[in-house]
Every structure is written in C-alpha cells, then in structure tokens.
Amino acid sequence: MHEVRTRIAESAEFFRDHALEADDLGRLPDAVAKELRRIGIIRMLQPKEYGGYEAHPVEFFEAVMDLGAQCGASGWVAGVVGVHPWQLGQWDKRFQEELWGSDPDTWIASPYAPMGRARRVEGGYRFSGRWPFSSGTDHCDWIILGGLMVDDDGNVTDPEPYNFVLPRSDYTIHDDSWDVIGLRGSGSKDVSVHDKFIPDYRVNKPTNFNDGVQAARVGRDEALYQLPFGTIFPAAINAATLGLAQGALNAFVDYTRHRVSVKGGAVVGDTTQMVTLGEAAADIRASRLALLDDWSRMYDEVAAGRPTTQTQRIEMRANSVRAVRRAVDAVDRLFMNAGGGSLQRSHPLQRFWRDMHAGMNHICSVAPPMYLAWSRDTFGLDVDPLGW
Image 1 (tube, rainbow, N blue to C red):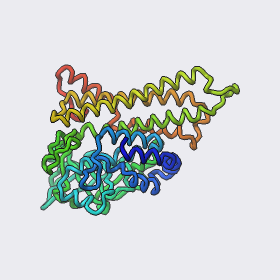
Image 2: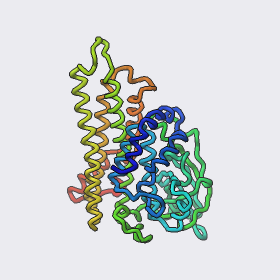
Image 3: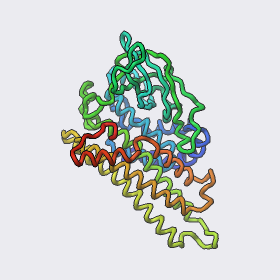
Image 4: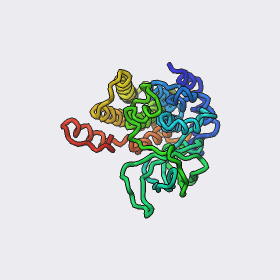
C-alpha cells in the first residue's frame, strides 16, 4: 500500500472529526489543509524532482477514495487539486520552478471552463473573467483558468479553449459565492480576474496534454505523463464521488450496529435492512473495482508504449459515469432505510448523501454524453470530443 494511504488510515479519525466543521465553514479548516500537506496526497502525481511521488494513477485514486470515505470535502479537494500537479508537471520548466522550486507543497486550484477572455499583447496576454466552482481555492497559491482568445474588440478569434495560470495575487476569491446544500466543505467558490497580464509560458492548450505531447516538449517520458488529460481529470472526480459512497456505507453500518427500531428490536435482525445493506455494499465495491481495473489496464497499455485509442477512452468514461451512478443509487437505498435519526446535521450519513448528489452535478459525472459517445463510436459515427 502506498505510504500516503497508510498516513490517511492513521489520520482517519482526525478527518472524520473535522468533517462537520468543514461543512459549517464552507471550506476546509486550516488544520485539515495542514494535515493534507503533511500526508502528501496532493503531491502523488507531482514530478519527483519537485518533491512528488509520480505515483501510479490507481494509487492516487485509491488514496482519494480512502480520504473521501472519512471526510467527503477533503476527498473532493484532494481529487481536484491533486490532478493539477500532473498537468503542471508537463508545463514549461521555468514555470515548474516558479511553482515548486521553493515549496513542493504549493497547491494549484482551477476551474477549466473557458469563461475568461484573453487579448494578445507583447510577451503574453491580458486576461479577464469570472468562474464558479474553484474547489479548495482558499488553500491554493496559484490557479488554472480556462478562456478563449479574442481580438481588441472582444470577438472570439479561436474557438479552442486555452489554460491560463495565475498567482494568488492576480485573482479574487468571492467568499459569498458558495452557499450550497452539498460539498459545502469543498469551498468551491467563484474567482475573478480583471485585466491581468499573463506571460506566454503560463499559457497552454488542454489538447496538448494528451498522449504525452506536452510531456515530450519538456523531456518527460514517464508513463504517468503519457496519459490523456481528458480521462485522468474526470477519473479524479469519479474517484472522489466513490469515496463518498464508501463513507456513506460505513456510516450506515456504524449507525445500524446499535440502532433499535420503533418496534423495539435491533435493526441488525431485520431481514429487509440486511438485504438492502448487502446489495448496496456489493454495488459500491463493484463500482470501485470497475474504475480501478480500467485504469490499471490503461496504464499498462501506455507503459508498454501503446497510445490509448478513442474507443478505449470513451469506454473508460462510460464505465466510470455508470460506476458512479450505481454507487449513488446504492446509497440512496441505504438512506431510505436509515430512519429519521440519520437526518440530524450531526449525522455523517446525511452529509455523505448530500455531498454525493452534489458531486453528481459535476460535468465529469454527467452520464448521457458518455453513453451517446460510446454508442456512436460503436457504429463508426462521429463523436463530439467534448463528450468524453
């Protein structure tokens, strides 16, 4: 087992104890962020030369699931923020040194939605915009933001999205923008940028981070960096959601162990309850195994020097969104059998349940485009690249 997972297991009680606090604060407590840095989960996909582990992606996803089963918000932030070092480890070497040269625990937020607008100037771009859903942003010192290129009149000149990376001093976090019913502790707040200069070397295209294109430009030939961005980032979101499902299952078991029904008997003696639990547990295990098995096979293919195909990527994405849906449905059945006591805000089951349903609103867990892409690919039809 990877050492990061061992440290998560040792700190499991700490994360459980701070989960309600994160929910109340609307972000991760400072103590939790500090513990995540100590554990090193954000550095799992980071280059070794900058203090990272360059871990197998399966090990990273397992760690995200382990953490999310203790504190859903922590697992979510670790999944999102933890993928960014994978991408930025392939960026211009000047920028990697700028990020991690003095502190390997520098965190980078996002989002990637192309809501910004960039205008070309000498040496770089002037950039503005506002974006929602910047998970873990309060504890990050840099941010990756999506945007489109425009001319001096604001007309879009290139429909392909770009990524722009800025330091904390160049963007504003809107603290009043995150008032939600689920994943409250993720602190996924709005951020905005007003006419900031970004040098050329901190601008790139997401499409460059497929099949090792960008990695080759900076001399990285490790299998980890040959993976496609369009699958690894969604998988981190899916893994975080599956961690929430395991947390809900654990909470149900702990609660049921001592629960007494209104009829006065122990709930563990109720056949309906036990059948529901057994079925849900099997579905959650199957969901976890489906994601991890797909990623083991993809990594082996890439490590053997065989680039992934469109068909493989689409199948993986379709499998992943189905796995998440299966796990969420399983937890729904548990929640409907947990009784009124589970509705208390102090009860972890309701928080996991809320957080899971919030996670299903993320574009990486939206299923119909994935199923459509798989079916169209099967029949040799064109596939919208944004769908997978």
